[in-house]
Length: 107
Image 1 (cartoon, rainbow, N blue to C red):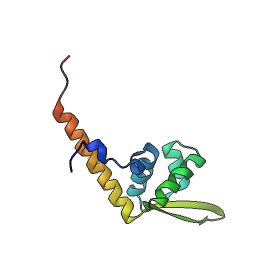
Image 2: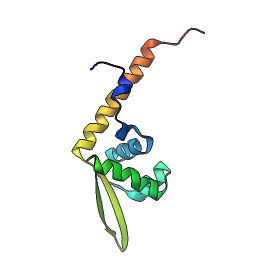
Image 3: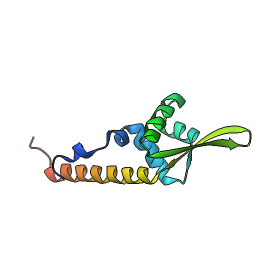
């Protein structure tokens, strides 16, 4: 690859809330909508929009069901989602490494 590492960050993945969704979903087999909403500190509507973007990109799967009598929505990473998250982290590490090697500019 040529060019600056920032050029290879994925706009779908890199957005703060979507990166949070992918990261949290990576930590668990599946994660409940309410858990994501609370931990990412977003509204239900905002979270739904981000989930739609990730689902359309094939990065997550959404499962709807019930826990007792309450409707629930669970989110899981797809194989493609795991790969996209791994690539994003790889690019971020490259970017961090490049910044650290440049050093501190003179005062």
